[in-house]
Length: 94
Image 1 (spheres, rainbow, N blue to C red):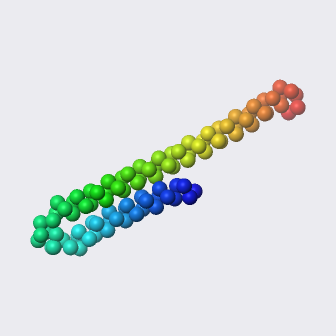
Image 2 (cartoon, rainbow, N blue to C red):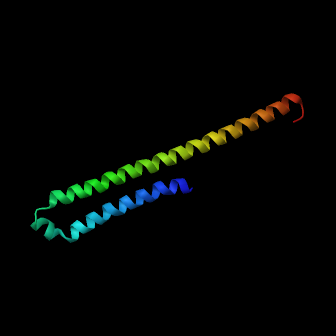
Image 3 (cartoon, rainbow, N blue to C red):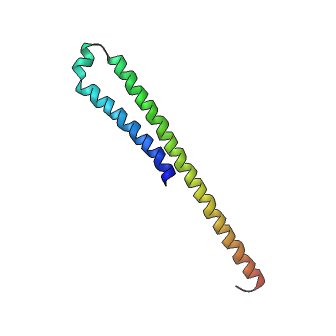
């Protein structure tokens, strides 16, 4: 659904940003080491991972909510079918 796609896109962007930070840091390892920016790079990566984790939780929660709604609809439909069948049996028309 388009509702869930929004959550998934945010999560994918956050994951891409985190991966980009790692690759950038590894490609520029000498410069990072020379200028002593390991702590700065670690903070940048941690922030990206924090955003990814938040987005991943939102994605999982949206999926859980969707599954819960579908389960309720399915349960209501089965219950209605069972009630209709039992009424037909009781009336002798089934």
